[in-house]
Image 1: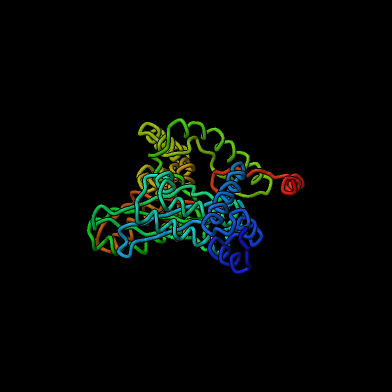
Image 2 (image 1 turned 120 degrees about the vertical axis):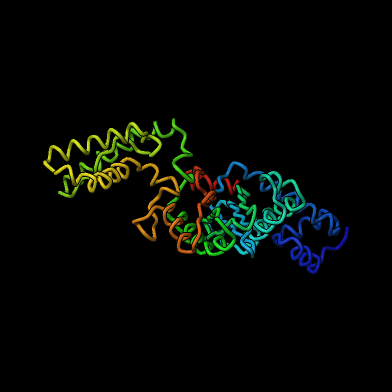
Length: 351
């Protein structure tokens, strides 16, 4: 039986970052064989992680990498079980290295990352940290040519990352739009759009949302009435996708009838109708303004939509630009967190 010295234990710990007592134990089992002991730690670390497979990893961090010439941007989300681990330097370094790996190798999916030598590094790092950690998702935007502008933003808590892509009329405009796109990414970070445009909504989704959203405004008006505050207009619709030519024609006819009934001279109707029709559209597109990036009210200028803000920024540069894609990742978004029984958790750990 080989003698297990303190120096051997220290060496193994330095190489694996495993707890001291675990290092000593495997060295004894491996009869002092350092390589075999390291393999035993690796196996047991992986086994420990496997036992945590039913745990929910809903904390974590995002990573962002943008090319120096703004031709490419990558966002990555890695989840941990606890925010405490997410603030660990080892975890932060794992996020950084994973982001670099995705940026440099262009994998098609998570399996394409984890099935490589980097995947082995990821698993070994997770074993050292000792908590369930997952590469949940990532996204990449690339410029097809120099008329494409790309930029992004990571929120200060490192839990939200957004990248935005716009098609411009020229390379000059694309370069000039970078700051605006970063501002749009900041907007998206705060306003949580789910899709680019109302045109992307599934008709069934719009239909299912309509009744509930209209009823919510009615309920809100009840409270506003109680507080003697101005009431909101109760819409008939919630998305521009529902405002067909026929619907808009009916709305215009109703506006004209109201003007006639109020005795307004017909010669001034053309000055009133556009504004009234715009208010009708505004009242009847609440879903778009909540979930579709281009249709949202721009946080830096509430008189513009995001689409209009981009158009005006490009116009100031003497060109044109249109956002064509974006990716927004928020840590834990859509993950249902399990409500743990703390007493049972302690008992399980003691078993």
